[in-house]
Image (cartoon, rainbow, N blue to C red; front, side):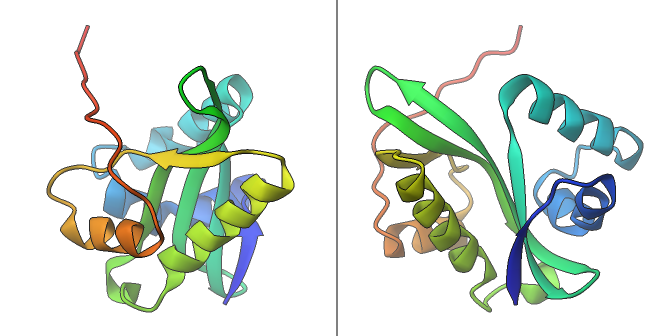
Length: 141
């Protein structure tokens, strides 16, 4: 397995299986446009766990974060593994990569939110030394 930054349209499209496993509400025909907008407007970055030249089995999407409460960090928006490839350490490797990237960029933390029902993901985060720091609230407008 290698980890690579997903910057080209073709790489972003290759991550679709992992993305749609986490975000089933997204329509494929709008996916690339959405990612490109997030990259341009929010500094969103994507990395993928690649097991063959054209097979991305897991991905992470993240961006820079700067808050009064925590300082400069990285916020992980998305982390997902294709269902048939779960349990092989791909998501953990992506987290390790992001932790190293954050350190190399002078960040002081990595943050993420996770749905209450994602117990397997919580187990991974706790094993990677994350702790539950707050509740996240959301309101539709």
